[in-house]
Length: 327
Length: 305
Figure 1: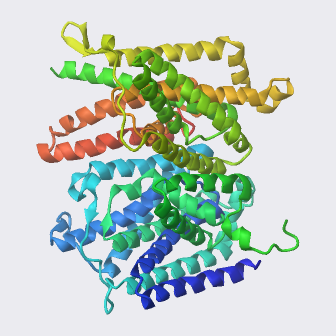
Figure 2 (figure 1 turned 30 degrees about the horizontal axis):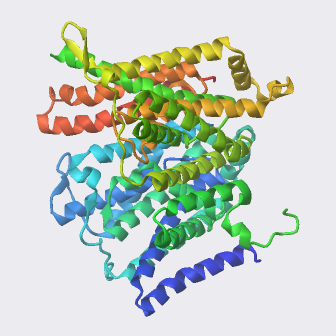
Figure 3 (figure 1 turned 135 degrees about the horizontal axis):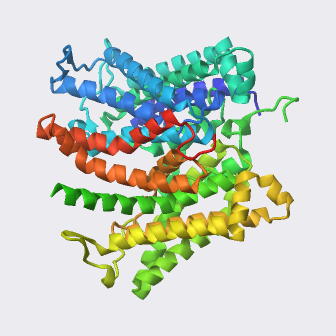
């Protein structure tokens, strides 16, 4: 039983240890799995800002994850077959450089989050949950019926996008690229949460009316949190495309939104490292149960229901030593 | 030619809309009375369809199968309400969303376990097979007309149930003030179970009726569930009237939009790109409709502000 801060250090330690062990023992599969955990963890940390800290229950974060993924896929697809993305009003060609792709993926996710946020944040409660879900579904159906980029079959990119000086096709290198982003995202989130802006959005979760009454424009605060949250999830989507070298509409599906939400809840809501632990637990469960039974989702469902009905504060809380004044 | 096509598509939209109504009526009732977001509502649609397919294969009777879909989904509804859902009423929306999301996984995999991964088929009864001439030169599928008829019948039945019966009074009272009616001596937890089972059985019936024209398979409930969410957001959460109008609106817009948008766009652009752009936008049309309505009226057409 230990405190959260110590626990977080252990998590980071394992994030360095496991892939290095995988490399030494030439078990590359484990590196890929850990990469997946890191990427999905980033997506979850993004959602956690809105959902965990600000109380914005977005059931549509797959939209940002998918958009980040599709932007990455489309840009590198055009670089591969050297067609222009569009030639009017100005010429834009594809690229396979991560340094070009990341900013575009990040900006487009931010823009999408701004639009969805502007519309959805007019509503609250159940309406907000459903409207964010509906926007994500809208993109999902668009991706399915838009034939240029594979439609329902998805889009393959044969080579992982590149970075100067390193070989991104090497699993360990790519892993450390993702880990780098994870650390950046954790750093930014921690700074945000402890800033005055962070105090404002965490206060909104508790009582929006009171925050309004001290003169804070809560709509703007919520919108900004939503945009930051969507942007981080979009970045994860971009990395995910590069990991799989494939993107399909299924990452835009509502189940993806549900899964990202599950990472947040499983790990422990409004905990910085919670989504990462949730994603790790999810992947481990998928791998171990999946090797015994095809119906592993049945057991996942059961575990989730038990978690929500009885544990309630996530996996991390099971390891955590309670302070005396907390009960 | 076009007017015939239009009329046919209008009927298709009506048929789709009335089935959406069966789904969204239960969803909106459950939310209105118990304050529960039930993502697992699509699972009852699936359970209804599978119960119907099972009974149809055992007895060969479509009508018994319809009965089985109602009762199968209702029984599942009662059991699940008592074991799990009941504990969620006091929780916040997030817990409800996650628990019912988990329930979808559980029920979908459970059904896959029992029935296997292959789709089942449910046959339309002989006397509903074939077409019926409606106006001079318009012929339309008897079965689809039957679906519209059933949908309207149930809408009227629900109206009578809610507006005229003692149970209806309790349901409406529950929507207005839960604590007060339990203080007045109404057995609230029994009322909740009844409302949940009613919603589940309507979804089950819809699943069986649609299962006969499509296929009965795991995961069939979720696409229509999300449309039902769009419907109740448009109609106003908690309002049966809103659910009815929203369902027809969504059903007709979706069907007509998918067919006619590419045609309309062909007037402005070359045919190939008109088809792809038209079908893409057509599939997004109801979501655009929803966004527009929420911009004008954030609580839906008939929602309480």
